[in-house]
Amino acid sequence: MSDQKNRFDTVKVRGGYNPAEHNYAVNVPIYQTAAFDFGSTERGKRLFSYQELGFLYTRVGNPTVAVLEQRIAELDGAKGAVAFASGMAAISNTILNLAGGGGRIVASPRLYGGSFDSFTQVYPDFGINIDFAGNPDDPKSYEAAIKPDTKAIFVETISNPNAIITDIDELAKVAHSHGIPLVVDNTFATPYLFRPLEHGADIVIYSATKQLNGHGNVIAGLVLDGGNFDWANGKFPQFEKKLYTLRDQDGVYRNVLEVFPEFPFAARLRTTFLNYFGATLGPFDAYLALIGIETLSERVAKQVANAHRIVRFLESRKEVSWVSHPYAKNSPSAVLAARNFPNGAGSILSFGFKGTDEQIDKFLNAVNIFSLHANVGDARSLIINSPKTTHGELTPEEQKLAGLLPETLRVSAGLEDPDDLIADLTQAFEVAFL
Image (cartoon, rainbow, N blue to C red; front, side):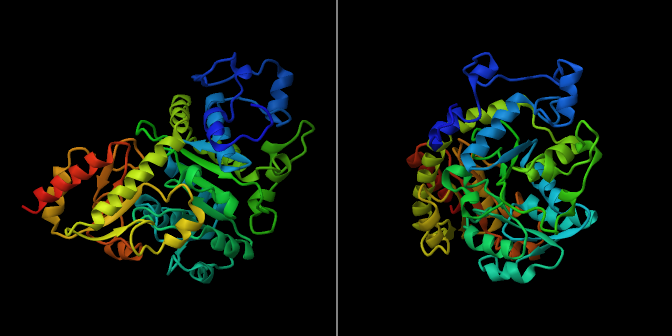
């Protein structure tokens, strides 16, 4: 790639990759190797002192994975990126990088069930406590929850499962006024629909398993570093600590801010957490994710269009009590969607099923085209009863805090013909209400 700034659809196909550096292979090669030769002791010294950046061991870096990291960084406008073996690994390593050793995170209660449950059940054991905003629609609610040892605000751009949009611009102002970063899980939106760093976010997380890959054949996660946050503001001493492992060739200890000034958060993630916890994304999985990203715009545009058709259909059904999507009638996210999402507000939606639990089961068992499983962003359309599955870890009180009603069904619109999808839902309603 030249130094010319290319547009989104060019970057998604060619970003982060120079064929001349890979034997002129047209496709990104799969570097299925555990380790890389140093070439000489002199080069080994340069690599270990970070005078030269290169590949040592696939646990901490691999050329195939590096192309994925660089491509998504370019798509989002980030300075650095680190790939992980799953979206949950991306989240957990981010939280530990922010608050390891003690601290607090202010979070939206509108999160994926695994994120919510890990926040309440896992991180407190590591000295990290989570404070949920009482009103996730009000930036002042987040601000009221900030304490002296708060390390970040954590939100989803489009919430799971109710597809409510978060005002990233306003939350970034709140976070920065208190000297803490805004961390955004942008999984549902992807950089095609929304680029959080342009709206003030500092760290962006993806479960690349979902829309980025889009084919349901890989588990992967990514963390992006915007490169603009001041990690030397006194609240994050772990970034200022000089380490033997970061010494130069003269043996002088350095910190991550000195060695990697452009992307210190991503660098510390890689050199510490990816290195020692080992949640490494394999090169073949990175290759699959890259193939998926090549069609990101086309897939998401079609999925968004299908979602809109499904929203309108569900709003016409007497068996449906409500529909939650930014383009649904009377949606609280309509203004933000119009302002920040010119390419559409996502392909995930939820609705209230106006029936008994037995009728919900009949409905879900009756669909033929929709798949009943716990993923989103697939080429195939998916449906699931979130309160009992993806958010089944949450207690009734926690589900209420997250705004998750017992009758909620979540839909992820795929790439099938919308008329076939609507026909499938129609016959499933008929079966459920015989």
